[in-house]
Image 1: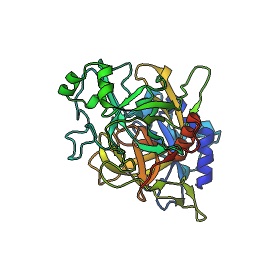
Image 2 (image 1 turned 90 degrees about the vertical axis):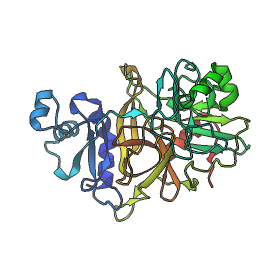
Image 3 (image 1 turned 180 degrees about the vertical axis):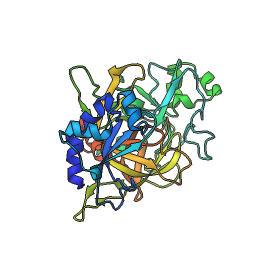
Image 4 (image 1 turned 120 degrees about the vertical axis):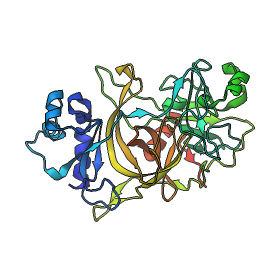
Length: 384
């Protein structure tokens, strides 16, 4: 299947394939049927990610259509070519990846023992990949954490930090100038919690930035099914005692060297752009992965107890951990991490996933949306 045909199918029918519960499909994307890896691929397919592969008998008993049948029904064709589709098992719902809001703090509650360079503690030199959050309206009754993905600057010399809307924008609820603190409140020790028992005392000691703008999340309503491309927000750095000389630096080594171009296909129908990637996040630190899906379409739930905060996302990157990882590519608390390719170029902003697959907003869409909501066309990523 040609890339352009797979892309056309995803963009035209992707939402229909993931919206119907009976299809049992969590995510669809452009993939490669043979190995999953996109590097060097010239033959593509439409990949469906499902909770569990079931036998025909099991699907019939549960009232679930096979992806073959769902694909045929949605596209209006009798029988799709076998090479056009693939089904991949991806247990666990795709969720945003913030640290859980729990009633008491506990540094290291996710991710086990922290490495020698601890991204979960107060950081003297602000870097990419350290824990941050917006504590407004929850501290001290609940705590949370996400990741500082990367930093930006403008022509006037102002400095900014970028993460997810659901990390520093409180999933659309944040107002301008709300505080962003480092570390995230989930990472406070019991002693630190006792020394900063109120929001005011927390902000006085740990504030590094304030919310500047949030790219609004468009949630599904009975009358409207809008598309989202990014889960992103930006805060302006404030004067603190933190060092600002390392804003291009990744917590566990290296620097951001540039911005990757969008993935395209070349004259030989092969993927153009490095699909070997890595990220540095607050929870799992440095992890490596491969981009195995492009133009991904999925429904993400921002509230486990309500459908009122379900959101459709389109044109997402799908990443699987490499065999060299000891765990998943991302985990709770990694939301907001910048993802780089092997040239140290930013490819996107991590925002959701499960233990098997991670979803990433393409960097071109993130930067475009941030410039739009801030009204600052000169915004640019700080690179080394």
